[in-house]
Image (cartoon, rainbow, N blue to C red; front, top):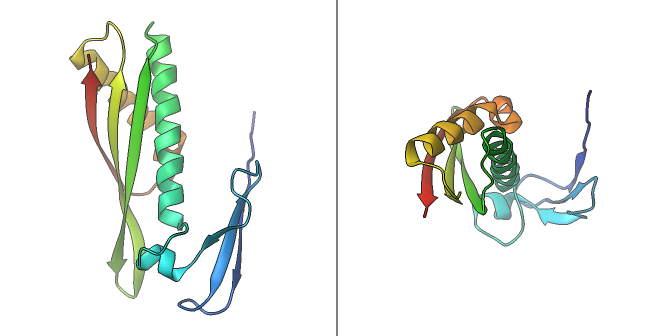
Length: 143
């Protein structure tokens, strides 16, 4: 089975003074602005790195939920943030890492089992497999 989803981008102008919009097939984003200032200067709007971060965090959270279920656990709450690192490399830039910060509330799971299952989700998440970058994680189990 192959599932295909689409995201699209439109751009006008040069790199630093141009502007663009991004949209998703589902309509969750519809002509949402992005540009140089949003990416490099902190101006409100979106940028590719935060979109990759949202994709990685959501994919990981779903993967962890699946793995927990296979082990007989159901999470009360899973909160994940993915911090994407964009670094200057030579004449350009490269995404060099994604750091996952996970806080979860899962009844009856022990700390060691939680860490084991979180690591399994980190490695098995389809977006983790897509990224050609170091993926690190801090995981906290709430009681």
